[in-house]
Structure formats: structure tokens, C-alpha cells
Image 1 (tube, rainbow, N blue to C red):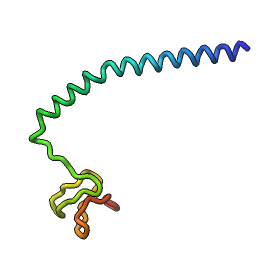
Image 2: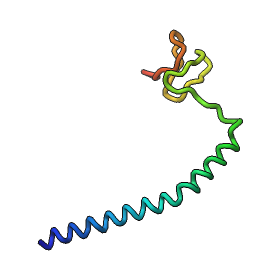
Image 3: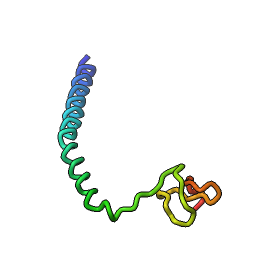
Image 4: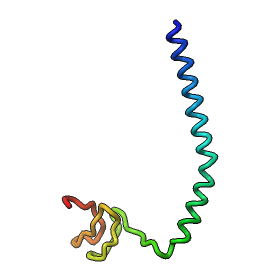
Length: 83
């Protein structure tokens, strides 16, 4: 009986701690998001966007994102295998 009461109390305390932590993160989230948006705008002209899976590409131009390669036959980014 004492062990089950202790486990129930410990579970409630753990639930309280998790809820409190997630609530404090939610309050910080808008500020972090805004700061990241403005930081990205500063380097917008310098950063080259890569193309993901299935996007059309030109072989040899290295347009695909990391882990993908432009397939010369189909001319779209595929998963890079074996290298």
C-alpha cells in the first residue's frame, strides 16, 4: 500500500515537472523563432538553397541537398547510394 502511494505521488510530481518544463519552453519559443527569422534574413543573399528528393536538377551543377545526387538519366535528385 505504501509503495503504491509512493509511486502515485512520484508519478504526479514527474507529471508536474514535465508540464512546467514544456510550458516554460513554449514561452521562449516565440522569441527564439523571431530571432532566427531575422538572423536568416541577414544572410538570405549568400545562402544557396538545395533541392530535395524528386526535384529537377542539372547534372554536374551540385544542386541537390546533402545525401542526394542528380541522376543524369532522369535529371532529378535521388538518394546517393554507395559513396
